[in-house]
Image (cartoon, rainbow, N blue to C red; front, side, top):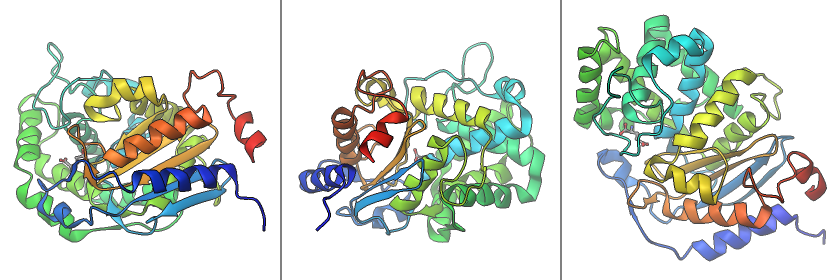
Length: 321
Ligand code: GLU
């Protein structure tokens, strides 16, 4: 029998340990999300060279939700350049909930593109450029990052469209301040749709690996995002990606990451690996309870923290592999 790879052993051990963690609860404010199986639990790692390690439920589709936000931000940077994007949305952590109804004093810009005000602004910017084609454009790029054609969960989309009054209020607030253009409702539809894109835990780790690999899909070789926008996507994930836990995450885990209310967490170890976890029970900050524990421990064990003296950059995995 061949010896088990260190990464495979690590994730299997963590899966076993945290399977019994049942803290938190499944999001229900989008009614359709409440149908998720709270026991589902997957961990997947894809290296920047395309090696895959996974365990648990890595084939169950779930919706991206907020994990779509760094990707749409990257697309906006590519379409408009960072100066133009910066006129519409800042890059400061807000320290408030993802759905807070607030804008920066003075500029009336949303704090950053990882919270709803900022993400809806970014999608509206894209909509101003691509009109009715916006969603297809976005879906194409996210599919290229995953390496397979992704689809939308129409039931989740409809569910959020029907009940997303708070996001609708945000869109109209942005319209009032002239941050988004007049087709705010249409842009909002694109936003709800991007949140309802279905991925599996494996897809998510692959998308993370595409970012880790400087925007190039590790297996197909497609250059999905340009390197400059990847740098900015990772930077904003590092400072703002984990809701109101972002500071603590940077302190404890120390890698760019993004989570979503359906229970996914995507983390990127630059030039090394993409990590994804899926477990729909959320803690009070809206992050997957098991996902946080797994990432904290994986980072400590493998020395993944950006400022860990054990992090040897891309040479680390070459040694382990
Ligand atoms: N579609 C969700 C919303 O806007 C995404 C939230 C999230 O995953 O943080 O409320």
